[in-house]
Length: 98
Ligand SMILES: [Zn+2]
Ligand SMILES: [Zn+2]
Image (cartoon, rainbow, N blue to C red; front, side, top):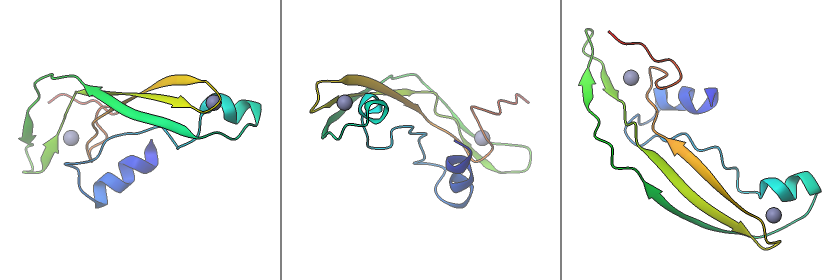
């Protein structure tokens, strides 16, 4: 999470999304199994959000939508990953309201 935020500062805040999924089935990792992961089909909430410029003229992109992705592995496990937008300022982990 901290790494993603650091990258957001350098890169594009606009397209950044915190994604916890590392490409491996979490259950297979625990059991020490190898598997092929399928899916990634997702839904995104359609919450309205506003981009804004703060007192110092810095651009913020606070997209509060949650992306829901469904995954399945070849061992028969299935799980859901959630990801939300993030901003260079640390939002939403570091929520500060002005
Ligand atoms: Zn699995
Ligand atoms: Zn921000």
